[in-house]
Length: 353
Image 1 (tube, helix red, strand yellow):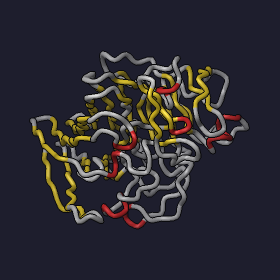
Image 2 (cartoon, helix red, strand yellow):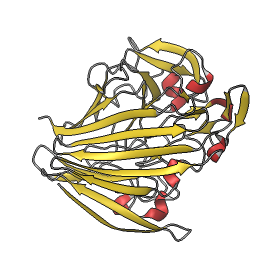
Image 3 (cartoon, rainbow, N blue to C red):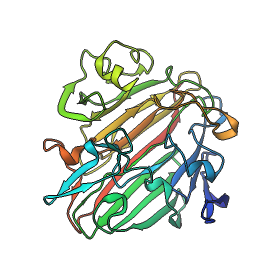
Image 4 (cartoon, helix red, strand yellow):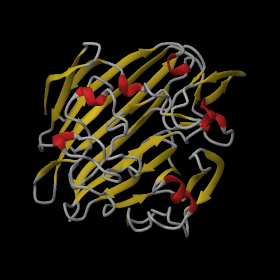
């Protein structure tokens, strides 16, 4: 295992940004930035041993300061949508930024992917960890509590990228962290992911209204285009005349997982047949947002000058259900003062011929 670091530019405020790169004994390479605790690249082999970067992103920190699609992003304090940008905690209303129509998305225009983090590195024989931490002060993003938070990325010699989240607040607050990496197993600059095959071990998903806010109703996937219980091409049903898909412009839906908080379980697979690259997803989270890059605008260049288009990447965002803080029958992301938020997600890469 090797780790290196190099300058990654400066922020608009003149802060120096560093890129940390871990290489395991099999040649898998993952890079992270201390700006935003973002995953910048994931380089893995195909069935012929040819390496490619399978994560969408940018070559410089200036673009990560904008990063409308959220490439590689650490998302918090609350991932996904909150209805009316309003949450009630202990009877008190907290009004958040309305940055998604009338709603709050990913905690507002300055999410956790727009801050600079303190960094520690931990090296072991078969794994190396880069740990990012900061204090999110009381009322940052409009939410209560000084929140000590840590996100750590570990690359193992089993070609696993493990993400561990930890947060604890001195006031009752909501905590719902995720990662917003976009994957394209044919290579980040290979175009549409509609030919990729997906499996999600879920029988149910959360229905939404026309603004993608969950209604509180949970629907069965059986007999619908939402069914990914067996490997299926993303593009097979994505244009189906089905209300949830029409509203979202593709897949942008939370799947109900069968996980327990005791250990991470396999919940999903992504497979690209031509390269043979396989990514398995393990988590202890309650939900998984499948998002097919429907809102990539195609108006900017990403890494290596490539201009990403709609559906050039797919996200597997492990999370509490969207708007769970306002829907009583959903598992709650409300954490009491001193009660830690802890979660783990693992993306494991291999090849399947």
